[in-house]
Image (cartoon, rainbow, N blue to C red):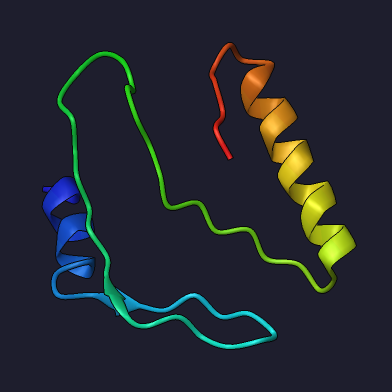
Length: 75
């Protein structure tokens, strides 16, 4: 039941990527669930920061944290 509630939040959802230079064209948000004991693939991470330096710092912290748990990150 909780899964269907989460999936319904993304039904027909669209978004854009905003930068200081321009916004991307709109694209559909997709939500997929794999019924498995291990996560094979994940995407669509959003990291928000006030400055480019802070953004790079936050991404590297996240990447280091994920890799320390034995997962692989491809940026």
